Image (tube, rainbow over all chains, first blue to last red):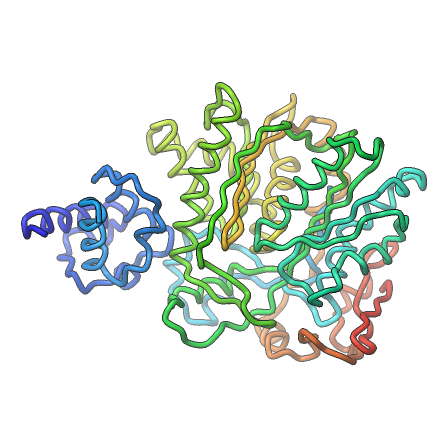
Length: 85
Length: 411
């Protein structure tokens, strides 16, 4: 896992969060942040994940990305899946 | 076709504020009311009350041709005895009839519907009819603790409802004519939501939404493999969805439009208003009625949309666990006229509006029948005046349970 690639994916997810939750825009997102605490309902959370999948051209079933507890875990999972893990 | 949305409902925004949930988070989820079963009601009464107007309107000779009665439910009252036996009795149907019950979470209605359609298509008994009755109630108590439960499971209480739909299937379809062979089904094992104990539900809301979206995509892909020249936007004038809550359907529609048609945001919004929102109308009055929700969406579409000419409706059904299907059919102006004659909207308006106190009393199980009750008698003080006075022939209510046997009366 390269730190740069990981940071890129983190920035991507952060932008997706800003897009889906305009009220959060400009606020620094930390790995330990939970989407629910940022004000995302279930549909928002799914939207954020899907936007990231699309941006990374990840053609997997969405259920493979469920179970993540916070933004950091989501980024880890996206990294893992996009590197064939 | 007919729908029974219960005798009582609770305003969802009232519930959300009472539970001190974040109302801002709920605003975009398009929830309005949830139907609540009274102590004198159970899945049998719901099912019979949905089916009775249909059966009563049939001439005796046609009624006797109902040779298949399927109850579709996840709210069964016995591990062996199906609801269909009681429904059969109180509708006075012919005994030369198959009686059975089907289960797979919210997919059960589509399962029963497809089985009935195939019975008619097989022509094994020419002229025979099938009656499909979906019926579900929620007696909502959440399973405590557990790793897999998300805290957002608290959203399930506002969205869970009660209701039944009834559909008469035959070789003379007036309301909805299925496109034969146009089916994209997709099922596999996933632990998203379930009813693992007699009186409760458990689940992972995020996993369930992800699974619903995956299935939305996969069922349509399969449908496209079987039907030539299909376009998500142009082939279907309306879309009906299994609707746990409106916001979920809006998100699913947006996802499908983006993926299949690459439409812009404004166009997707307009498309949602035109093609999808009619199907949400009744679902927002009852909440999730599980096996029957997709047919409640179909009824809402046919009742409320424009039918100057025949229109094709695409239907997406999803049941946790999971199994899903995309299918389609055509509805006509005549069908709309016939369905409107059932006055579904007016009956929903006539229901009793519960106060929070009344609702809490119902939740604590005041008079409600628990699974496995051996003997019980209805406490008449739990039947609101609304229910007493309803309809020319009245409705079926549960009066007594004697040695596990349920006894009903016409109110």
